Length: 302
Image 1 (tube, rainbow, N blue to C red):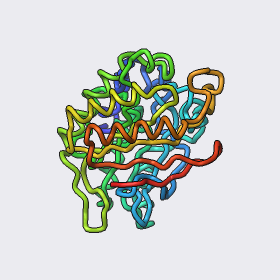
Image 2: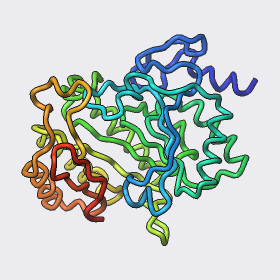
Image 3: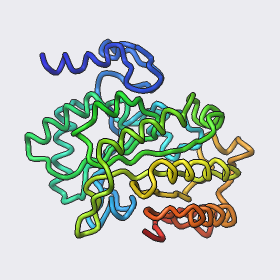
Image 4: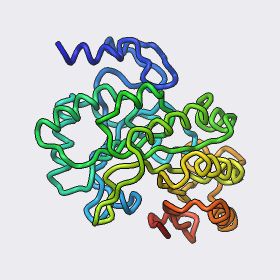
């Protein structure tokens, strides 16, 4: 009975900013295409997150299917846009958390979890009753209701949000969402309010805190600079910043003239220089690959 009461929050779903109000309990789907049941594509040990997330033992990732954004360049589009994966119960999700912990991973990493927040909270409760002790990472695209983030208080140790767009027209054009910056920035401030400044253990692993990720897009350097300046002005040295160079034109991006190529070295160097100019001190910069097909999952400095 308690589970059904909790799941009633998706009976008229307003979990994400789209607020579709569809009855997911009856099998209806809204913008994110997610129903009543949790759907996952993969549970694995991931060794190529930021060093303080993956560490030596890897991050215990769970990739959730579907997404409340429609990024035309999504590198995981088969999972996020095409819905690849299988449905599982809340109890099965809790068991996956435990199995990941038994592998010795540094944390439980929830990738694109927004649509399933209600179910995830229940799974965490079940797993903690079974002995789950490692930190839980909420790895999100940033397009989150503040109310949804408040719901997660006490369940999430590390927030790992994207902050993709400063200019909302870019969010609309490339991800089919409205008011991205206002919504994502407000959610990130709530994340910081919950978990505070980074706590790093003696092995260099984050136990608590916020890491804001930003993927640099070709021809969009002013967007990146505005994002970085906002972080500096609002969360100066209270969070980690992770600058990503891994963009390549996949999925529908190949048909867009602005973003149908990888970053150039000159573009990325300009962003590196800007980071130094505004004195962002804590974080990571991803190495840019030498060749078009190359993605180098390494991080230059902390």
